[in-house]
Length: 230
Image (cartoon, rainbow, N blue to C red):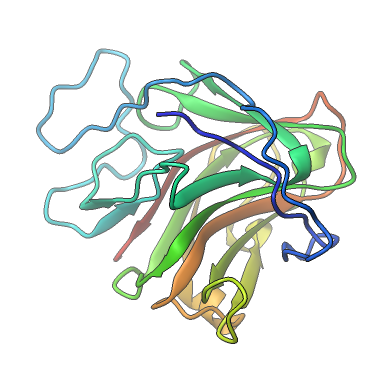
């Protein structure tokens, strides 16, 4: 699967909101096409496969957004770059896959800061989806670099340009994040996003990650991203 990460949006400060001042720029792929492995319950695992903090049990509602997760799920939305996109906003970070140090699966993604005043990116759906059966967003993060002392996560409901459009965000440290070099498994209730204005039955941006300034040497690992009905 090819992940095209194009600059089509920008962040207003750290508010994680799209602005009309940013022109779409198709740009080039940030890294080459790579195979992404997904395993369902009962499938044999390679020797170096890591089960992760909460392995999926068949029959449990679990949504994979097509990135940052290799475990089983009851529903997966593939990032096809046609109607489902992963965007790096304004080239503010790079992303590479590594085959060791993962929280789950066979690999982990390393987000590398571009040395810009802010960074951000997200998974966008052209057609909004109903996520109201899910209650929790799970995200595992690891870093000790200053650029990631504060991380914000966002979701958006309503089609772009519609009156129903609403952007919501939370601060990762409110849910256990600290850039102390250890893995932190965040379990964020969707009610936290709903309290900030999200309509979980009409989600158009499943995940936004963002933060502030840093150097090009700063990086953060991201893994085990999915929605559950826990």
